[in-house]
Image 1 (spheres, helix red, strand yellow):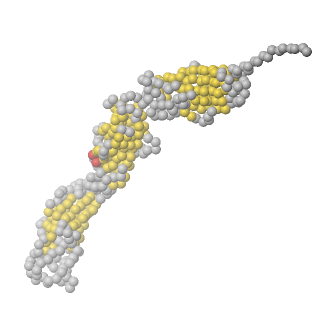
Image 2 (cartoon, helix red, strand yellow; image 1 turned 135 degrees about the vertical axis):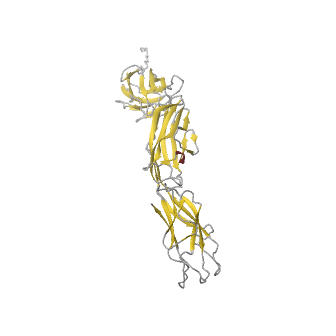
Image 3 (tube, helix red, strand yellow; image 1 turned 90 degrees about the vertical axis):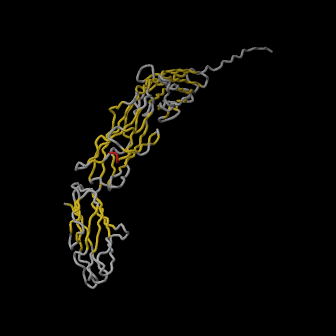
Length: 443
């Protein structure tokens, strides 16, 4: 029997070879996101990742982004850079849509099961952001491809971005562009009006926000509204301030050490009792300052306020009798104690006026008997501004008697009217009545 011998030869399968090539689509060697202005997005830069594979084994593509750091050691936030991947020809991207670049290893792409060569494009950008600190930022991004058989290839690119310095003042969103304080009566407080502005400051220098009335509030007749009668209160990232009067010189609203943010200011007016009527218009200036120096960056807001017309007179008794005059005397006793009335005129029309007083008819009993027409007399005391038109103990006749005239500006006033009753000795006993009428007219 013949014997034979053979040699068994074992050959392991060759591992798949993968090669990664990274190309800047726009050209150049770096991923350069250009210059970014606060509040505006950067340009979009694209990288083409070409994976050459000998096939036979699937592979995965990864990315690792180092933090972008500026010359002062400041870092961009981890989510400051975003990316979007294209779909490969045969493989599958790991995520769709726009997503933030992670600060750790991040899978980008998975090949088909056969490890077919493929190409992926990744687009990068920095979205609009107000708080990115100014500076020149540098970092690196590493791309690696790993095959199932253990083959690895790596490429590294420098990442660049310039964040421009910005210190400016902006309107905030859909906030009002004017201060409407509404329609208010003298002696009352207006509704509050709100101002919303944003301070953009991505530098290391502190800023101040000031306000002043650039144009005082004036009505159609030239009357002015005191700036001290308008107050404001401010709320910002630095805190809140109490209400304080507004002036015609720069007034500090808020100090910002760095970063800026939303400033919310509320305004209200306390209308002086004697404020002339009319529609008042003026201009509020809000200005940004840096290192104590005013900048040219300012906002001008129209301010408007309507003061209602007032022309009223009240007559009251200080003795709690309302608007009534009550005299009591014994028959034939002559003259009872005088009664007082307080007359107050509120007006803001700016026109002179006069007060008239008179009886509708003589004081009469229910049975028809009357006191003499000159039985009721009056004396005016202590007007603050106007002129007394009636002599002391002027009889209040039927009709109208001039009692008081205002000054030429039609200022409000308040005075006392002392009324007396002269009863004839032969007057019939009883309760006499009449109506005393006060009238205010302009002239």
